[in-house]
Amino acid sequence: MHRKRVVKEASAAEEVMAAVAETGVKRQGQINVLAAKSNRRATNRVALVEDSVRVENILLDSGADVNVVLRGVTKALTAAAVPLEIVVQDKPQLVFHYGETAAPQKMSRRAAFGKLTLDTACGPLVLRGLKAWVDYTASSIDLIISRPVMEFLGFSMDDLLVEARQQKSEWDVSDGVDIPYSNMARVTRLMAESRDPPDPCLEDSDAVCHT
Image (cartoon, rainbow, N blue to C red; front, side):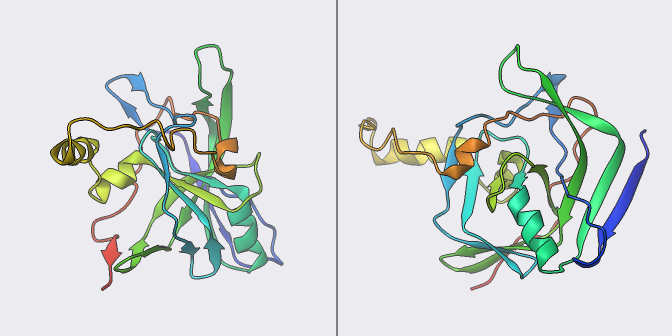
C-alpha cells in the first residue's frame, strides 16, 4: 500500500495544489481505458460544481472507465476560493494512452468533488463524492462522466439497444453520424490505472433527483 497525503485548498490566497482524481478501473486482469472519441453523449444541460462553478459541457461517455475533468474547472474553483479536497499519491499512478505503442503517462493527484449538480428535465440531480482525473493539457471547463457512474445511475447499453429494437429492427444512421466533436474531443488520451482497484465512484444515496 502506498502512502497518501490529503491536502485542502482553503482559499485562493493559500498555496494551491492542482487537483486530479478518479482512480482507473481494472477488471479480470485487463486494463480498461478512457476511449478516444468513444460514445460521448452531450447532455445539452449544464452542471454546477460545489454550487459555484458552472460547467456548460458535461459529457456522458459509455466508453470511459474513468471520470475526467479539465483543469479549467479546478482553476475556477480556486479563483472562487472554494475548498477542494486533493489527494496526492507519493507514488504516481501509471495511465496509458490509446494504442499499443502509446507511451504511458504518470498522474499523482486526484480531486474529490463534494457536490456536482446536474440539470435534468425533472429537476436537479445531485452527485456527491465524484472523483475525476484532471487533464492539465486543456484549460476549458469540461467534465466527462464515465460508464461506471452512468451504470450506477441506471444506464444500460443493453437496455438502450433493446429499446431501439423494440421501436424498429433497422435504423438509418447515415445522417448525424459525423457530428463535430465539442472541445472535449481534445481529451483524446485513453486513461487507465494499472495498479490499484478503484475507489467507489459514488456512495449509496449520493444521486438524488428532485421533482
